[in-house]
Length: 263
Image (cartoon, rainbow, N blue to C red; front, top):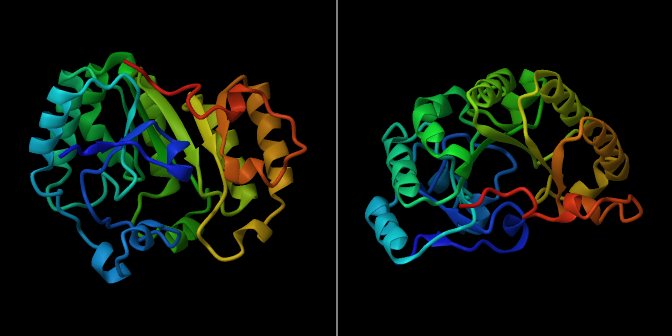
């Protein structure tokens, strides 16, 4: 049983490979696509998740049998640093296994300072790891409305800064963007902090007529103005690019694998 898999569709834009350690999440984000993807009711998905059965055994077997040279994302289903049943011990053990087998890894979480428990493990990877967080709102009340039990924006920003200052390659995911004005404030903050190496920028999806919510073309223009001036690595997701086909982007800004970590 291979537990490391190749994602498809919009998920593929994030990483060539992925690994899901838990099924479920405690954050209860309003925009979460996982319950629908897994064909589960919200009450059966949101809660305090436990690790997938025998996940570490299957992961080690997978790593013994296969060599991974391109990054493996943790994770698309659930958050490996949410409030889970084993206090993220499975996350730590999985990272140690991945490092032992020299696999490159990307970690995406809204767990804030919980991620810092494994700072020593992140450091052990050297340049084979990138650690990021999803940024949606500067406004705490809006963050609580959309992501009730995830860490607050300031905690996520502070965590990115600590990671970056400790020599960890960092990234920020601006998908979903719900209110462009909020996302632009967050981009400006991370540029001022110099806390993010790579930006992934999209928009809200899986949520009614989201394409009509905002002026997505202007958002793309505003993002390019900020990030090009700062000479930052950035990837613009297709969901955003397709709504502004006349906005000229570089080859790097349209290549999802341009800045992934590799072995």
